Length: 201
Image (spheres, rainbow, N blue to C red):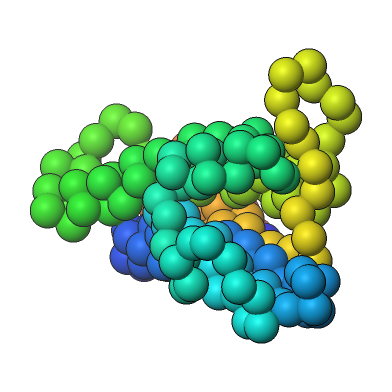
């Protein structure tokens, strides 16, 4: 099923990239699990925001980290692996944002490009969604033991908010109807041919 027509595809691709960059791909919530206090941690594509309630720690509160900074900060527990995967996902989202800026600045060139930028955007957001899904699973459940890598589960419950949106955006952009799509042209040609035959009969 096609949800978006061709004339709105570029606009949707740009909006999807920016929403994917602004919506947290996950939110971790642990109520009363940390020395009687609570934790709320937002994982935006390009930064981490942690808020502790009722807990005294030798670190800023709220705490703001970039993805690659979180790798070292959580190196002991839950371990660097989910944050390393997240960092790669952040790079992919960054590419999507750069593509959206290029699509806005060079709209005419992209309209005549051999490669459809809308489907490229859909592919980038799909890759980002898969990477953030892996990072979410590692944070929520941990992973099988890997020699030399700590992979414990993060406390509380993880809500993969942005991951759902990224999958939805990717699916919509990859399924968008394009005017110059050979499959659509063939279908339209068959429909027109059928209509002519009917009139002649």
